[in-house]
Length: 208
Image (cartoon, rainbow, N blue to C red; front, side):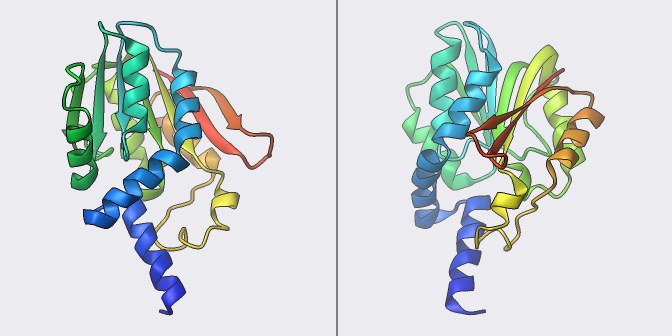
């Protein structure tokens, strides 16, 4: 493996599971790079004050702050993250947020009770999931009846052009992700695109 490929592989590994000092730097990068799609995902939820929301795979924590602002003082936000580095970063950053519950865990084995959240987002996570059906089943399990989910994914054709995605990313067709959501019992309500390009970021809106 040449130096260019080694650097791309290292970045891909950190994006999937940030660790250590490099992971903390990646967390800051994720907040900047994901600000638009995460904001779009939170907007799409249509949160109401007092609801319980979740960010699954919160990474740098940008979405947690948005969700806290939307549910208000009577609401509750859960954050689930597989990376110990990102979890520790969020624990420090949100130390005074008493309406936030942070959990270490995977999207395929969520540490949340059945029917415990009104709405959830998960952005740029499914590329790192081997068992997509199980992940979607877990999202459906934690949603209350009538709950809403937004799954954010980059357009596979556009992402395939990025040098790091050939190192471990699972760039599934959008139709495959939709099928997994529907197989889990969720109803797709919209495939919302960010930007004017036909290959813009996808926000898959679904309801329980």
